[in-house]
Amino acid sequence: MEEVAERRGARPLAFLGDSQRRARILTFAAFALILLVLIVFEGLHDVLQTSINGLSLGAIYALGAVGLTLVYGILKLVNFAQGDMLAFGGYIAYLANVTWGLPFAVAAILAMVFVALIGVVYERGLLGPMRERGAGILQLLLISIGVAFILRAIITFIWSTNFKQLDVNRTGTKEILGLSIGDTQLMVIVVGVSVLVAVGLLLRYTLLGKRMRALSDNLDLAETSGINTRQVILITWIFAGALAGLAGVMAGAITDLKPEYGFALLLPIFAAVVLGGIGDAFGALFGGLLLGVVIELSTLVIDPKWKVTIGFAVLILVLIIRPQGLLGKARTV
Image 1: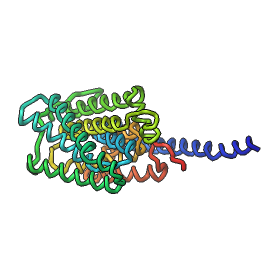
Image 2: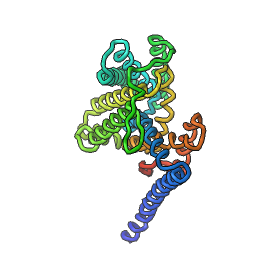
Image 3: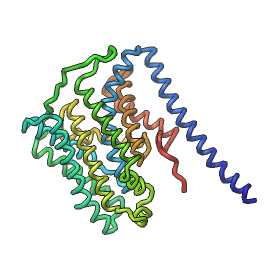
Image 4: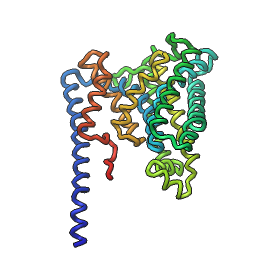
């Protein structure tokens, strides 16, 4: 009887696994079909050229999304201040790169360090004490929204609402296999993907990464097993801040800086997190890159001003097929 019960209990799980694989295969097959149709009607060159543009945009989405999902995975907090932390990083880079005349690479590092410090103050000064007082998710969400408005107000007060530009070469291009790619776009892709791969390897193979994943699975159990959860949470915020700062710098390198541009990027970053699987850093990486490519490919057939709408339409379709995201795992009670 026990063996029969075990077999009966295993069938739903096996079926669930099969349905997940089918949903994932169906999603990727649909994407491949769309690519094939675009290649037939628009040409391979135009599709590849547009995909390169999408990769630079996707790298920015992915940098912001990984930081956002790391915080959510451990604290179950949706950080609405992530976009404005990102924008703050862009303006710190402007201060160092344009006002002080420092090299772009140095400005990017300073931006990452400064926004990481914002993350530390955010956690130690606001979120940590509020959690110790028993604050719930709603209160923490309201705090994150308040911090977002404060950061945006500081940016506006210091740098005004006028557009700013970083001192980067936006006109230089390179030819690679017959495809034209801007020097700045190439830098964004290489830096963004390299940093994301490094973060992925850290999460997968280092002791710190294992502790972060342990907190993501069960924070209380991780604490009882001897992990210094307070320290790991703080390090998570440092990572999230540094990635947000770098994303802001990369975004500022390919577009103009304005106080609201962090909020404009926040919604696609949320979409990338959900698309890849909420709380999954690797899913956020993949979701960001995929979303950037899809958004740019849509410009081959529609007016570019509607491209973000197409990205969210794809997100909705994917979630209808696979609610937990492309790489997310189904949750059971």
